[in-house]
Length: 395
Image (cartoon, rainbow, N blue to C red; front, side, top):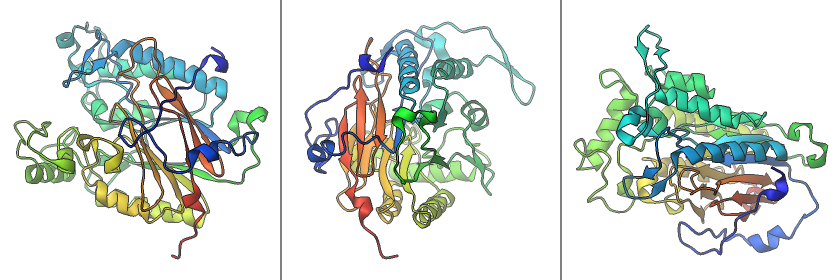
């Protein structure tokens, strides 16, 4: 498929969560530097949630296309390869939780067995599903940065995710694995002379683990982080533990305190501060990636990181460094430009809920003065100016 066959999807803007408005003079910004190549280009996709089951619906009734999602991911990878993007970022939920019980949802169990580290034999539909999606994405030959969400944890341990997705998990002093890391993006455009840029911008991807504090795949007896998650949910959601995923009766941002979400513990918060400080010292710009959204006005409350306020306070302190934050989890997408810092917060639309033949993903061009979001399928296109990063802070 040639690049000309990919049609960019635009919609009119409003202030609602599902219609984007950069509030950043984006129309005038889009007219500048039209002949200047971007400093960086990366692919972006989220919530593939493939499962070997018939199409179905979410628990709230939204249509979901489990098999088509993998076809859409393959198409995205082909486009990324044709564009020779610097890297690709997968924002999590590469498979669906229903892989854990495919027969219940109308699928068939493959008889293929897998040997666990303890020698036990199991049938792992989730492992096969991840392998199938990764094979679909392998059309793209460059670097893919993965984060993970709740749906991976319904199927696989963090040990297996480290193996499958090359996430460099950190073993913290508590004995818990946490998957946060940074990656300095190379601006070689895979040796693509057509896209070569003279920009001196240095760009770092900073990947957060928003399931640091959570119930999922944490040992009930020994995990400090699971104990903390239990305390957080007990204190903030009267439905817990009997209806742990229900926000019924909770109001506003308190609706985030459900078991399919998580939070970020202090060691990762300290790592975040240190990573941003180092980026400032090295005169790097940063884009933050996470599965769960961080800004309350960029998403529905039920999708927020539990301690989003702590994370947001840190990010605002580095507004001269951080260009934007991209997340998944909220399938219909959302956007806000933070009034205090100027940082752009974008929740990216899910691949899973786009009906065939629609294929939803994005290509993001990073210029010295703006981000250009080239949305495909149901992903909204936009232009975000990044003038807030030009202001030098007194530190």
